[in-house]
Image (cartoon, rainbow, N blue to C red):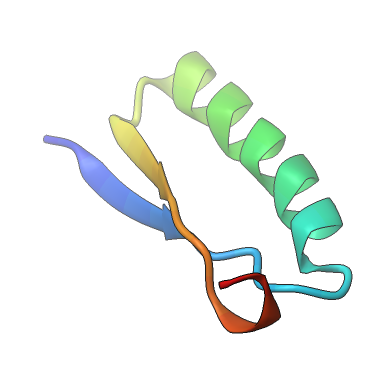
Length: 47
């Protein structure tokens, strides 16, 4: 069973924070085979 996660970094420091958070999610997903499906989109000032 997959888990869908929508990544919305926004603006300001959001993109920097989410870049690192996505790396963590991908590593955890790979190690524990959690079935994360990451989707990226824009929100806020970045839209």
